[in-house]
Image 1: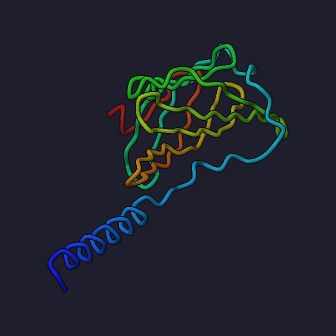
Image 2: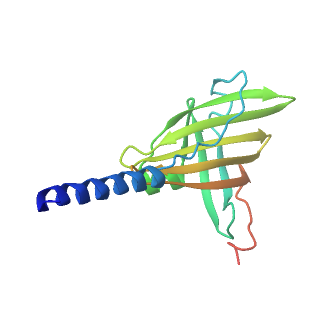
Image 3: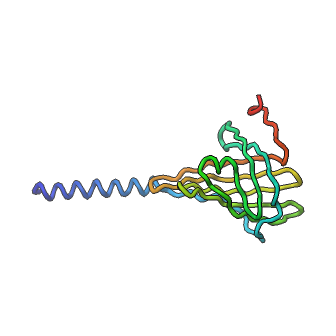
Length: 160
């Protein structure tokens, strides 16, 4: 083969291998699967602020947060501090006397999406969710769960 043909052959192999690697690296991960149902625009939680202890699934990490519900919108203090997520519309539904809520928040400056799904019973809140970061070359997801109330929760690890 002439040098030019060999150069093109090597270039084609390198480009093909790189494209294959990027295809493998960028496997998408679905956001948290929120159950179907008769979701309604949020208002039932308006005016409430929940102090929560959040746990990263698969680790011992605990974090404090405050979840705010105002005028049909939701904001996590931690998400706001991290990436200026702002306010997002929340939705609710009633199932057997429990108020369920969901909200999807997005960072305006980075490819972060956080999906929340939880229940509120009186002053108590429980939730699960995912924080997903999608870039063209990889997708990373953190699963979390948390609980709290309209009163500050006590955590033996964080409060020691």
